Image (cartoon, rainbow, N blue to C red; front, side):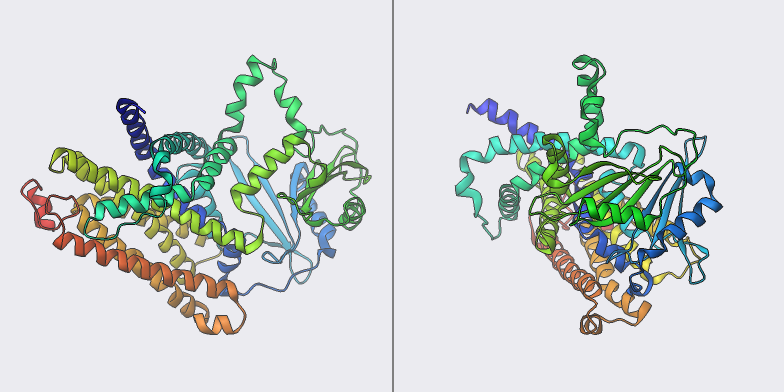
Length: 531
């Protein structure tokens, strides 16, 4: 390859990585945690003791009670059946207002059969999931912004393959540990990137499709298929076509009978949710979702019924998927790691953290490369170092703060989710401001210590909140509590070691480096005093 061409690919890889890296760091770090979304939803419950699993026998009683209290809910609502991690039978309804806003409602039946509020006390797992696909931006726009970032991510991967493919085998396991820290970081960056390349290619592709799918189809919809593309692929995307109410009242078939019909049509299906449309109308439908394990990548199944007559309108199981449905559902399954059990979840967790390291280390390498070319750090390089440290470590510390708030604060019902989210953003933006005021090396050392302290405090917060220390939780068979505590302690140790290494390099490393604490002549007077 010509030297000029190679330089062009290196420039593309570098600048696209810098632009996309900040959003992708949050997406990968939060995504690694949300691989255990269901388990985290159980952990965040006060006391971390899940109630005994309820029976679904009272499902119709709950539906009838909600429709009597809120007739408008008949248009669309979801019935969530008890499961291992969410053992309470509940009904969810998103009320749409004329101004475009929504109000989320959730109900359950209390011990006396009356309606009770079922909104979760904590929404930490949902917030982290939202953080994964929006990077903290408003959900209405963040998903599209992150989709564009993932397209840039794909360009960075492609250019990186072109750059490093010739030395693939030679550099695969090259990790030269020594005094040349830049070379060691370069080796680690390359090794992580090469070994996890298939994972990153899948994520870049699936994320772009899941976030921007509708926008990507728009040109074909209007320029190729004359506005009929969505009609052609509707059966691959949706379980049922939009239905119009007949305007004729028809009583609902009891939920237990609907479930019996589903089990007859799909005997191996484990029912999880039932979504009603136009309940009480002759054209009303219910989409019943569940899991059918048939040795395929995707286990999702759905049976569509008439909600009043029980007529089977569609049965969709993995073995019956069309090519389009197999592709789409398989891509979703690969993206979320919802196959293969805990072995796959732990692999995805490690790869997610490795991906966050990839973007963080990429920025650090760019900063050092700029110094090698110019001989001294420029103002732009110092500010890039500050922002990288504040943004990346701020997001890690913010997540730790949200976890602690979940266990430490005792608040009125419904107030905890706002405090969890507020704690994240307060620490995140506070870290960015702090990094802007401090020399990069000092800020990195201090923020790494903050991350270590927050992670170390979590097992003790759990202990204080419900009297469950890590050892007794393990003895009592509460594996999720023990698992979270163990991971928190490992994070605390890793951040502490990184903080020590940062301080050691700052004191004895190259004085011309942006990570030095020796205040060279080109460093501003303010930064020298702060150091």
